Length: 66
Image (cartoon, rainbow, N blue to C red; front, side):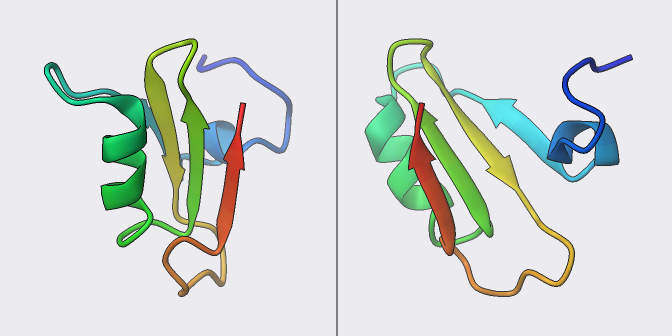
């Protein structure tokens, strides 16, 4: 029901796309990098993708800009 590719973190239930009113995307992403394994910064779309990957235990290990 969430859509996306068959092996996405969203389909696995380990990811979310988030935003915070009044906070910039880059600022939010920097906070998320301290907590989540995967952090995608989507400035043009106004959200941050976060995920906890299987076997992941290093916050901010997987980062990218979309």
